[in-house]
Length: 375
Image 1 (cartoon, helix red, strand yellow):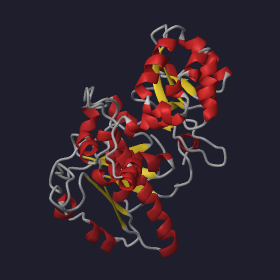
Image 2 (tube, helix red, strand yellow):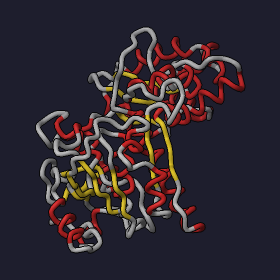
Image 3 (cartoon, helix red, strand yellow):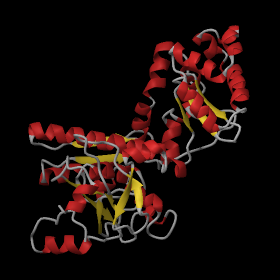
């Protein structure tokens, strides 16, 4: 592995090869997590490429770049049109056949609703999994329901898949045998919503999207310069007292509605209106200074362009260069460090079949596939 490749990935999975046959987000996200840890990921694509390549901009969309860094691309005409349960078996690439060829193989299957059952053959996307799993019900505002934000179910399912694969790698280290790792978007998102499910089973009340901010005493407030700031008071009384001092509003402390945490939870909307009125009188910078002085948990609601220049983000080296970029020159590095060492760069997402010639030539010579060095 070249020194550049070492800088772009963590070495913990060095020597592990991953063959990815994924499109869009979920499978590619799982493989990217493993690539970030040092695995050699070969992305198998149809001659037309992963459809996410052309999601917004020809064959190298920013969406594709996001989930396919640190990989190599090999184009094969496999006539795969989707990845619903049963497709791999029909093509002779199912888990039973491949395990008979290589008992050490860890084979990961990702589906929308699981391998069987009444929904198994349905198409599934991010929004569908969020809705069916119950997750959407605890984040959407029923007064004005609309989808907001990134593709959470796709990415979260990818994280769960990578989690399962890592567990299987540990087990293989003990037993010498691979296994079949399975995860569905429905199961991943239901598990991700484990807290509201736990509340339902314990309290016999159906959670709503209003529960978490009320219980956590979390607020998003608008400042005088039309910026947004988030505060999180949690359950510690000192944070409420610090907020009252930062606001210079002793009348709030004297208000019987807000005298206890239970009261503030019950009167969440009334308190939010009061806080809105106070925060509208000063700028974001002024509030940041005041809240920090009184040790109140807070943060500006940063836009993406502001995150890039945030002092703590810059200190942590969160934004790193992309080596040999075909598109964006910078990216967010992997989040995990090992023994204090963090990735200093990432490798660019591959062009379609960028590494096909080298891989095919090695196979024709009867050699192992070449390693992940670029070029």
